[in-house]
Amino acid sequence: MRYSACLLALLPFALSSPIQQSLDFSSLAPRADPSLTGYLGVFFLGDAPSVYFYLSNGNNAASLTSLNKNQPVINPTKGSKGVRDPSIIPGGGADAGNKWYIIGTDLNIAKTNWDAAQRTGSRGIFVWESSDLVSWTGERLVQVEEATAGMVWAPAAIWDAEKGQYLVHWASKFFAASDTQHKGSPSPTRIRYAHTKDFKTFSAPQDYINKSPTEIIDLDIFQLGGNQSYARFMKNETAKTVFTEISTNGLFGTWTRPGGNSAIIASGVEGPAVYWDNQVAGKAHLILDFYEIDGYRPYESTDVKGGRWTASDRGGWPKNLRHGSVMPINATQGSVLSAKWK
Image 1 (cartoon, rainbow, N blue to C red):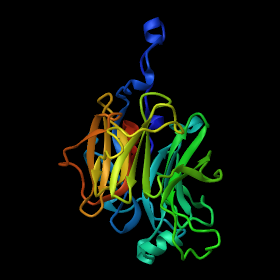
Image 2: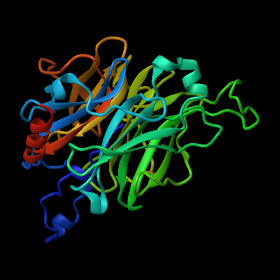
Image 3: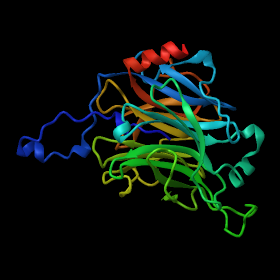
């Protein structure tokens, strides 16, 4: 549920010859970015529904250390007073490099149960914003879904350059309009979306991924090496598997599944979150939440389009991190975070 589009470096080519002009830039891997020297991870821990920060050990994408003495950096005060699935969103457009958002699910399971949380759960998303990654202000709980929805889970976002706004997406299931108390049978869970410029006002929600009768949750979208090329990762909640799809013609283009319709990355997992490696061109990292075992585990790939992922070394990876996201950062940002939350 997480977004890296604003961190992609431009490919170092000039269109100065017929050969270069014929290149398909969507097929080229983004180059590594030497200005990025670490990673910031935001998670919740087990049944502790707050936002916890982790900083990488050096520039190692699969090695993290807790900040703030393993205490939360953000404690929600609105709604259920519990936030799950936090996603950190770099600013897009004029806000690139100047603003960041953290959004998340409004759910404190200690105050409810899983059935009620899907029938009469929150229809809003938590939002915090920052201009320095240290001070997080403007807490708000913004309703994004209509009255027939039973819940809004795992919101995340990506900058939609064609629209000039953020595309925000989440998982919801729905009840008949006449079933105002949501006691009947709901629809299968599907992915919804809306656009926003400021995470305050959102467009009317619409379907983004509907694979009924299959239940789909936990979407994360990842921009590849071109303006129209994307990978998206999601959980088949019916089969309890995570799989990927690829589009080379935009966020609303045609999506295909590498390896065929039955291909998966892993089973018994959820909360996929993906980010580029700072040092190795074309290398990406994917974390998967083994929710019934020990939380997130890291994976890596140099063939995202092919859907080929292998387990990373977990020697420096903490246990029991739950559904969140990771964002590459520069040395200044790392120093500020370390100084504030060491």
